[in-house]
Length: 191
Ligand code: TYD
Picture 1 (cartoon, rainbow, N blue to C red):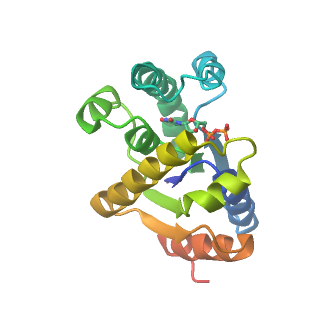
Picture 2: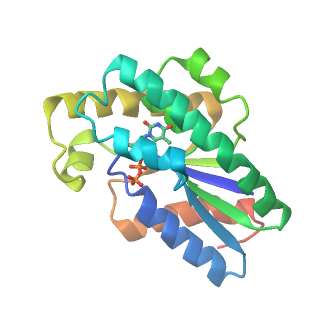
Picture 3: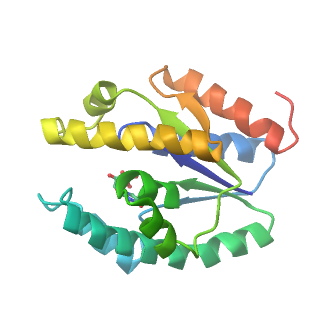
């Protein structure tokens, strides 16, 4: 089972993913946590490039899209192997991040044709103002506009692809409970 958390920066994905992983392990499941960008050389290059002041420019985003797709392609074998060992793969982001952040749906889908489709996508949705107060030093007007368009694309993708949407502006424990309630039946558990 390949489960993915998606959401804009500041939506709390990493914290929730760790808590979900811990809970599943306590329930007796074997869990592997992954994240995109990964820690591969491509992932490290992406992280470096994301620090550029022009990171949100169109041309730059196109280059990033190719790098994200390359980084992700490397990750797919890992996911397959973990699933073969009956482990639950919990991922912080998937190719849906590229559809939401890089835009240009057809082209992004094309370069991500080798990406596995997650069995379950949970979108942590929250207002940009709240998200920005959680991310240090990223409160510019451009940043807010950019994130608002990413959020809207996520909500559209959620409708098109049947993501489960969780209100991430709630208190951390409530978000965790909401996520557990979505995941449990997928694994045959009653909570
Ligand atoms: P993020 O999840 O914030 O990683 P970390 O918390 O480890 O720094 O991802 C870094 C940024 O990369 C984030 O702003 C979203 C962006 N991103 C894309 O634009 N496209 C993608 O395909 C992926 C996977 C991430």
